[in-house]
Length: 305
Ligand code: DGJ
Image 1 (cartoon, helix red, strand yellow):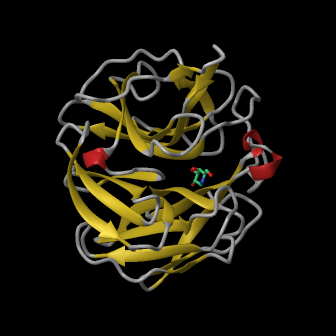
Image 2 (tube, helix red, strand yellow):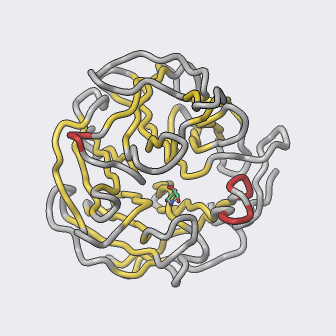
């Protein structure tokens, strides 16, 4: 069994490095399915699963350059790779994948942040679906929700089944939250614009005792910075002022998602490889503790899963 240390490489049950960066987990049929970025070869998004969150079984590369595509909403860009002027193939970027199960359609619906592989000008969301949590995904393309920019993103499903997509917009200056359509396939309405001009990214939303919490970072590329938290009584209502979470580098990490588990809330984050190399990125996992409404983390060398 793995001893999972924060900031060290983690290995799956086959002994291969786990690439699930900027990821998300979905609990389903007794397994935690872990989705995340994998930039090796022709891969984009990988899936692992675990019963105990100590040992992870690789389930496959669920989105690659070869994933089947099918249009859904008009004017989505279905390209999963490009050919440059010199004839060389170029991968796009699919970042921060998140997956929810839609009760109405019985589909697993994946949302991610799409870029063209050259720069961050596209600022689009991308959608894929499957009948299964860990294989069989079809890519439905990328688009700008209501014409807006959408970069670092997250999904949140409320207790009543309503789903929301939150993403850094207006060149990262503001954080937008859209309610999704009933089938989770499209944005239905922009329901909030948060922290105008604060440049928040890496959003992670969770709900505790009827209140909504969001963790986020400032925008400093791959370098970690001071995390912040905020709380609200409703997703589309007023959110509290941003307050510090972790230390000035959030212990060298940037939020990926928060996993509610057995009454606890687990902060899953990336420690990006940055200048060492993207594939050297590791994970930081800490239990979120609460002082009244204030969430906080304390650093531990061992992942607190
Ligand atoms: C920080 C973001 O959180 C990452 O997902 C990635 O977009 C990098 N910036 C790119 O610089």
